[in-house]
Image (cartoon, rainbow, N blue to C red):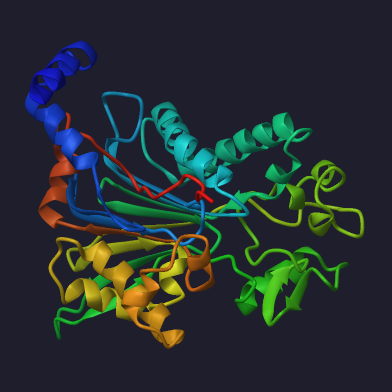
Length: 388
């Protein structure tokens, strides 16, 4: 009965697709749930295999994520490739959900205008997403002022035409696993710049941008924070630290600055790097800071290199959870029994996407005249409030 229904839906909604390709796409997009852990052990992107996993710690999942492989523009002529987005929200899930729904669509639109992928396309997509969320805040400000204090880190990776573009605001991270030919060992190469004021160079940047404010960065409870409020210096959202008109009543007092805002304090400008992929570039790890709080870059790439590809993102998440349990001198099994919300006291939401890079598939994806099949996957979690 289910197969008949699927065939009927296929004929009505996707008349140009075969039932096999529809079933494949449907299968590719689905993950599995194991308590607070969601995972997609294996799927295929244009340049190889991928693995994806999310573990929820907050009552409402603030991490959002997506993998889109296939057309990277609205044009049939391409470009084609793979897009990865890791959106680590803070203050609530609204901004990360908004980014998940809009950033890739903006990127496709700008790629169509340029008929190619480029740094400029990605930068414009970030700008449009930031402006879009500002519009949401303006509309909801009177009835939901707290939305001005909600934001998201935003890490993007785009594999297209033999190149990797990595863009970032915030403290999520992209790491390349690169094999050394002489020894066969894998080394970690971080490709993303981070914007967290725990990093001394980021504090220097903030002081140079705000030379008239000696308290632009404050050490509070042994943690460096911008204006004593937030750890990241760049983000999507967090409009209360970008627009003076949203840093006043009815915003909660704890978010309001004591002095007038002379200029935007936070930035939404992404740091973007371009890397020409080489045959010894084996895989990419994209993850929210919840992973990197527990594992070093080198530890993460060695886990990927030394274990089967199937389920490798889930393995990384579980390795991080083991470390979190160890730091609290508790058993992993006991950590897993802790419900969402309370779990946030032990670790953050964690999202991991691992992309394996097949050199042959990379060249085929660039040169093929045949329109490749598309894959669309979104990370998931338990997003309903707890019942009391």
